[in-house]
Structure formats: C-alpha cells, structure tokens
Figure (tube, helix red, strand yellow):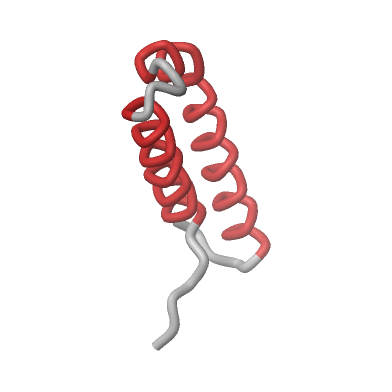
Length: 66
C-alpha cells in the first residue's frame, strides 16, 4: 500500500516547514514574524488554490470524479 501524491498534503507540509523556518528566524531576531505573516499570508491562498486546481485537472485526466 503506497501513498498517493496529494497536493493538499504538499501545501500543508510546505506551510509547516515555512512556519518553522520563520519561527526560528524570528526567535534569532533576524525577522519580525508578524510583519512577514501579515505581508505574505495571501500567498498561502494562491498556493492552496493552485493545488486545488491541479488536483481537479489531475482527477479529470485520470477519469476520477471527486
């Protein structure tokens, strides 16, 4: 039983990695976490939307309906 590729898992995983990196940089005083999150949070919606579009088109190409 293998794991299938899931855009949602990829987006969540990358988001967690990004938050971990930003948290580490904020604790070291390199960046202001609230400013970065406030500025870049819309990008997460764009990435999430692109992952959903990919999933929809991949399902159609594979003959599945989700």
